[in-house]
Image (cartoon, rainbow, N blue to C red; front, side, top):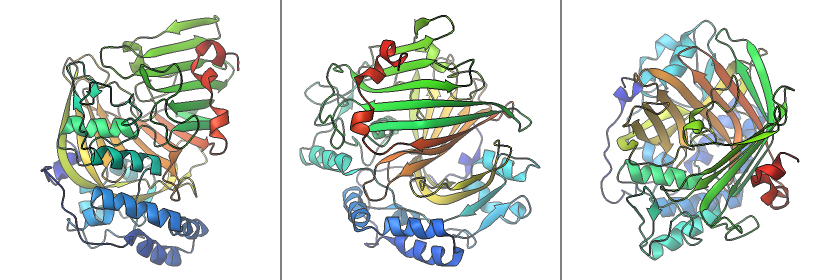
Length: 469
């Protein structure tokens, strides 16, 4: 695939990691200056959030573990003089910044250049430092202290030296298995281990705008989503492992509220840990009062009509690791401009009245690994999925997918609802663009934070009970 990867700085990963200079949290210093000059209340509130002593301490502990933070990584690059917080780019001045193609995804550049693109303007904000919650930190520290290093077996299962599945074992399920991945498979597993950035997730509601190729709202869906990590639970009750989930890593469930023609659709997917075992994947269709058991091939279908999100794209990436079907290639490292994860404090993008475009969107400079997942058999929905995985929190900052001709197909950008004081994350908004037919999905989310231990129970992962809730 010929794309903006051509501007990639190939820093091939070697053994170990360089501990770069910088002991202070430079995100705070830069946000202090930026918030003062922007004058916007949301920037002041974000500054206050990252200055919370709990946030400062957790950021430092993660930096000590990784050996770097985002600003240390950025120090290794020479940046254009104009690439700094406060820069605003739109159709009127895009041509002034020819270096932008090295940092901004091609699809976003094309949108900025278009008369009616789905992103009309971007503003660069200071680079943050991101990290996961203390449970993941403590589990990773414990695993490293014991020098446990998992491997991938012949069934595409990540296993510990004692033969247990890494993502089922309470001692290892919460940990990031490879802090400094040496190849694409290790990077893939660390991304998988990130999961959704929390142990229990609730969206109430999730609003999905399905827009046609002319930028007009086709249909708007409203639904509820629940997700749960089944093993290695450190922070949200029930702790440890959830009963009767011995073979499953995690589960996600969905209930559609509107419009009327799809209201009542319910779906549950539980991920089997072992590569030679199938997921438990069921969907209830109220139109005929029937529950279907779905296969792996069904996971490539859209979740429902008009959505550019397949079941394998659910929660950004939920394709099963399979060495027989896919190659996992670590292409290198680079810096990209991506949406900040500020949703817990404020939404970093402003939606147009059409509900089918963003009038403005904030972006920050992020250090990423570039992971290419290639279909070897020519039967999957994507020939190549390219993920730009953040070097601080092991989550994909951006995704590009190609069709089986290896031509541009879909892109995925999202902004997390991330809490600086404890490192927990859900979602705030998602943008999925079909480059072939110009259809667009804009998904906005209201995450639930309180009483999640009581609001997500076993009924939500039993299709026969979920459909009657």
